[in-house]
Image (cartoon, rainbow, N blue to C red; front, top):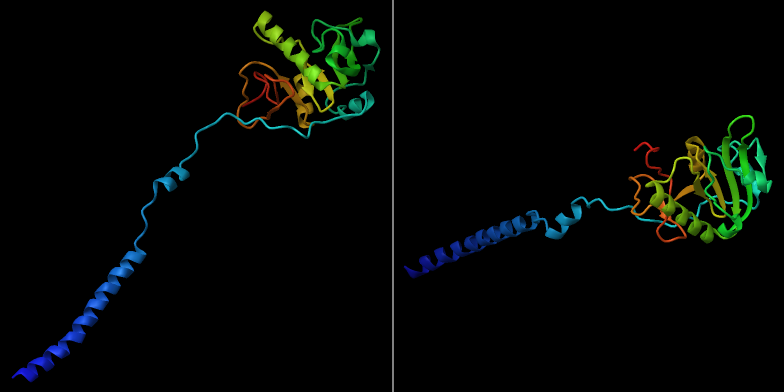
Length: 227
């Protein structure tokens, strides 16, 4: 009988449509919830970056002083200036244990005022000498200091320990060969002008631009800092 057969086929058709729709829905849901594969770009971004040389930065926090008296007051916690002189002959004194950074005419180095802390040689050897300077032309000072350091390297293979290190401020300089004094000055944001070719401090130390090509400002001293 054709009519019963047609009725039976009509009854089965909606069920097939419903079943097909469910299967399509399940497939779509699986596609939507499947985790996305990591892209090469994402994987590269999450990888640790290789170590790079420290980047030099300009320093805008270097200490400054309007006069030699202000500079002496500024550094008195770091440098013992209980004995202090601005007499040119006294300031020009050199000792076998204490050599100033400035060699020759201070004016040629851009120095405006200059004074000496410590006891000069007398009945005993000189003690605790450190030179304070206010500077009108810091670019000239740095250029002379660079030439002096390169001369030391050429003649001795290193910068002598008895030669005072020049710690730079914005318009002031303190010259000292005493590690304890320099440590205090670093805490006050003074930085050492290092002109040794190829110098790079370890990670964590200051590494900043100077006014002279080939030199940097840093608070790291090879052989004295603990890494």
